Image (cartoon, rainbow, N blue to C red):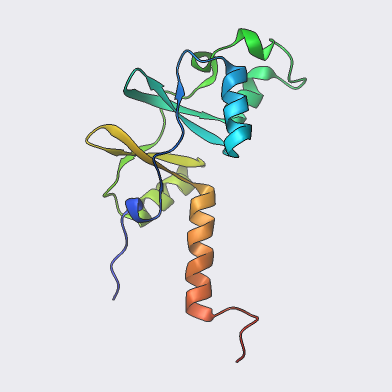
Amino acid sequence: MPMIPAVKSVMTPFPYAVPLQSSLADAQAMMREHRVRHLPVIDGHQLVGVLSDRDIKLILGPDFDYPPPGELTVADAYQSDSYTVDLNTPLDAVLLEMAEQHIGSALVTRKGGLAGIFTATDACREFGLLLKKRRGSPNEAA
C-alpha cells in the first residue's frame, strides 16, 4: 500500500508574502498580479498570519469602498490565527483539517520559517491528477 505523501510534495514552495504594514491596496495589487487568493503575512522575517481575498472583501464591506482601501493596511484585515503546518505533515491530515475548519489554505513551515503554502486549488489539482492516473483520461482509448 502506498504511503501518504507529506504536504511538502504538493505545496506551492516559496510563495509570495506581504509585509504586515503594507497597504491593503498594495496587497490587492499583488494578488491580482500573481493571480493568488492567499498571501502569507510577514513582520520582518517572522511569519505572522495569512491574508485572503475574502478577508479583504469582508473589511471593505459590500460596496468595496468603505473604508477606502488606501487607508487600510494588511494588519487591519489579515488572520493571525492561520492554519500552519510543518512541511512533513501528512497530506491527509492537512486536507481533513482544512475541510473540517472550512479554510482555504495552510501555511507550510520549516523550522518555524515560511516554506510554502497549500491551498484548495493545490488540493483540487492533485486530486484531479490522482484520478486521471487511476482511471485514465476520458479521451484515451479503452
